[in-house]
Amino acid sequence: QVQLVESGGGLVQAGGSLRLSCAASGSIFRINAMGWYRQAPGKQRELVAVIHRGGSTNYADSVKGRFTIDRDNAKKTVYLQMNSLKPEDTAVYYCNAEGLDRNVRRFDSWGQGTQVTVSS
Image (cartoon, rainbow, N blue to C red):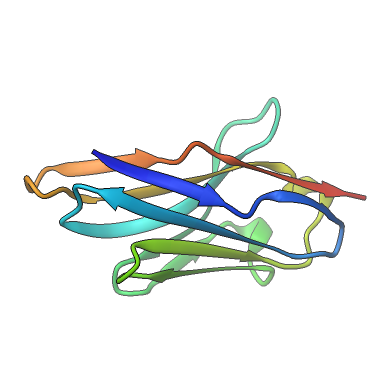
């Protein structure tokens, strides 16, 4: 099993910044991609940003230029630096990781979620 533990959420005023972290542990052979998704009340979960093992990234249009995703492969950790936060960024943020476990079977794991609230 692969576990993901997130941290760094909280309450911030519009225009402020937060940094989320997500550490993976367990039976991991290789992590291919790590990403952040979010789900606001009454809305579907959506991709925020993803970073692949080689370092390439993808972002939702709504966060481009404001959010930055990076990862530390040695620590099996992914980060999301969120700047210029807006009230519409308010959501539960979930970490995701996919790769191969030590039995060389594919895994696709989710964290428990961390609340980000941006006040106007």
